[in-house]
Image 1 (cartoon, rainbow, N blue to C red):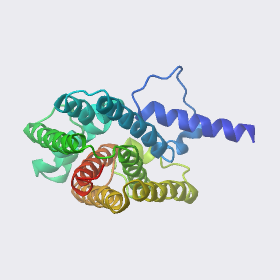
Image 2: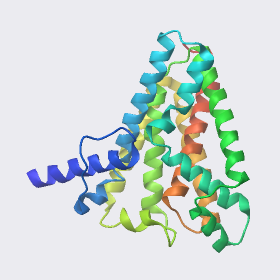
Image 3: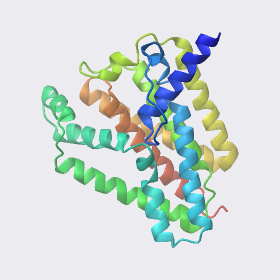
Image 4: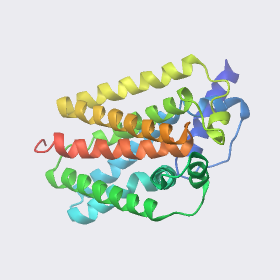
Length: 260
């Protein structure tokens, strides 16, 4: 029993180490716990969401100018995650929008350089992210849904990697799918259901719209990426995660406008 608990702790700690930029007191890696990294990814999302909410709440209560507060809140989730998923968003945008043959798209995905497509998409992302957060902050909309959005998006991210066929060169496909079971997927799906329920509780109908927006736009994004790249990878999942969270923010600004 003690050994199993230790492995569960290691899996959680490894997941935080991979997907969160907050420094850890010590390095830990156990090959036997690799299959727990993705199931615990939504819990990392909850931690990131709580920090995101905390930053937004402090700036709001501190009376910081709305424009400055908006800028900080808009970039906060990227900073907390170490820009990991933003990197996947840019790489995938480069590959898909190149409209090259499959092998060339797959090469572009792994190319460390960026093209105009990534720069353009990054600009579009930040404009929409800033605008959505500005409405949320300026209207005084309840910020608690910021905790839930990263949980739902990371549940979808984990499930996409575990359930969809991996790209041949994807490290995630081989590293984290090995030894995963149906119980792992059920665990992730259960957290997703709890996240959606909590979103409804916090925002009522508006919260449901936010949750549906995250799920729907993540699904469209991962479907587009999967079809274009003939498989899923960490970069593609990160691309869909960023789009899903952006859609949640936009829905939050639109559906909850006027609610205090």
